[in-house]
Length: 483
Image (cartoon, rainbow, N blue to C red):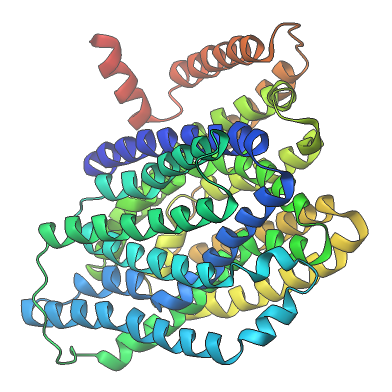
């Protein structure tokens, strides 16, 4: 866990810096500098790009990580990497051709929101940029280097957005200019990471097909489906809100989703390094080490994300006092979204185990069913209950999916993330949230948030340390305490 913890902590710090900058953008700059319908439009364009890019990448990022360590010959590794560079380009060209052929049909689909019609091409460009960025990020992770890539993924584009929003505020940019430069940021980010990845692992192009190419392509296709499933579950609700409700409500809902997504940061940070390590342990059939990694990642993530859950729940009322009234939303909806993110963290490296094993096909079949469930629930609930319906559909879908994946790892590998400290940690999170939520501090929202946050951190941290809920976290705290 030494390498895992070191890079996970670095990634988590970097990710939180990115999320802090993103919070300023999402909670303050976007709402104050753009009209709700413009904010909703930009949110939709990025969400639509997130739905499309997994198709562009054709599973290449995950395929590289799974098969690179399985090959012993450097020649075969070079051939694998060459194929992974070429496939996304070919797929993007095919999708672009279909886009040209059916362009009028796309325009007709967005007849109710004509603002989207003028910017469809940007979805395509951003999708390609994200797809290749992920390819180059996985390329870098093959050398167990994830920190710089994580910085580019979490911080770079958010700083760029901050600059663009300030340019809009000072009338240097209009909406068109903002979207052009936003697209440019994603393209520049892709090229920067390409240079970094190629410096770590210089490409030696070999256009001959690697061994086991049929197995590799089958895995890529299935990971393509998996990636589409994951992104569909993440952004389907926002895209469907655009279809059923006024586009400005996309921005209202996206703020709530962003607040909840802060809880997922520790898992995202740890995943960058645990994914290649998990793949390596599976390839080497080291089940004991894999089980140890599974339980430790679960406990550590539950503890860290539990504190974030508490900080959000106890401060959410004051946080919304800082946001314009048209973006207000009920606290219960945010708690619902936060709860499912907390559950996701509890799974630890569960996802990496499944998708780097021979059981990924089964997960994909289940995932397709889950996406269909998500579509049905959104179609049913959004017209009935608006954005509350989207939140309920999202919670129900993810809860079902996570529970199934938890069961699959237990059934196929005989492993689970539970230990004797799991229940006490959950009880601690629940009681601390309920207790501090009841405390009302009648000060400026920023001061009230600061006081409650300090109180929550001290109380939670003291109990976690005293009862030694995580040996890895306690060892880090003891190290800093000595210093």
